[in-house]
Image 1 (spheres, rainbow, N blue to C red):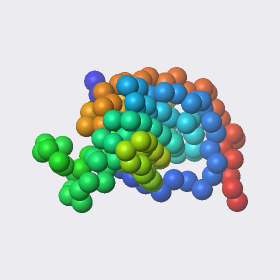
Image 2: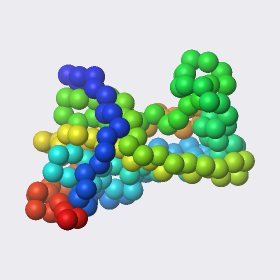
Image 3: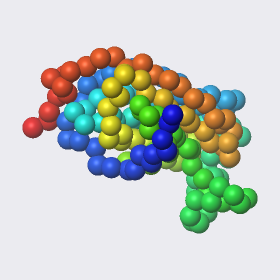
Length: 160
């Protein structure tokens, strides 16, 4: 049974990590795609560099959703600000993730978002589940289960 959890934004470690999964498309619909550049394993968690790209009508919708209002996130009302929703599952924990960093921009023809998520837990079974959605910009909910390659602590390269 899964237990609800929230993966809060956190400062990522000062090491390079070890790549334990290559790039993967997490969700796609006409004019919009979300992906993961890779999964970096660190001694005490995972770093997930996330990308989202949109073009055409989806780019205009994404830009409008992201930048049209300075109101706090409110998924219930029209004209409210929104962002992609990312949920992460590890072991018996599953819940929403807040980006550690995020930057985006765009307009009528294109939209780009780059974000990084930090998960302060390592999967004991090597499995990581990521669910992504942004229905306000045309991206339906999609769930992806990743099998991470085994790694050792020695593979995590320190910077200093």
